[in-house]
Image (cartoon, rainbow, N blue to C red; front, top):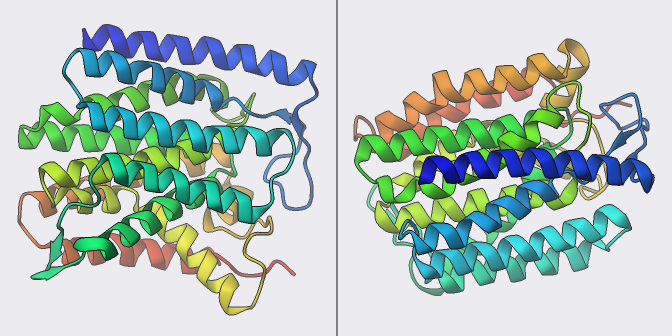
Length: 335
């Protein structure tokens, strides 16, 4: 049954993305290249809506099959839909940053309400999420995940291959642990993104848009929080698996903040953007897949199997990624 569902989600997402591409061309909803762009030709945008539609359609089926619980379904549907609507409206016009951020925190609060907050998580004997301040930490985590995914959706295929490789890696970890009840969410998300990737693989014929990138960010964050309730150590697996995006976005933002720049303004100074200008979109996207599957996935497995603790695992994963960000001049002004 789950195989049939995944095939249906993949094909539906692929078909709907093609439809949105024709719609965007007809309505002139094109991403026009400028000095900050990583592409050179006008390209339709907004194709990420297909990911939203078919992932959300899969959730009630998963619930009816007993693969996910009702609070998880309601948390993912409500937050994902709100974030996607905000992104869709912003794709078609413009929403002030303060109102977008307000909506993002509202979506995060919705997730935390249905998830009953954040599971008690410890690292080196210190609790990182307990009581109300744990809710605040969870909200910041979800909002940062949402926005960093938007920041990192700047070249062909990158946001798509990141989501697919991370979700497949997480699913493999669940299987290794015998926690198969968690696999339906990541697998459905991977299938929905896979259908979109058919059109988005370099050279992209349509872009994801804010509706899709923001949706992926908050759903990936929510799936991490969901896993932590079953096994607290699993959240560190997600944080390690998402290391490429977390490190590049955080390093770049920090460097721009230090220089006093307006971080909400568009720019093209992420490590992946410098790399894409040097080596091309396809090579960068596929390099991320290699890093995720051959480096971050094994580190995540070692952490969850107890070979070393979460802090050591994060250091092993993040220090080389930070080194890459530095070597690629992430956050360095182009002027």
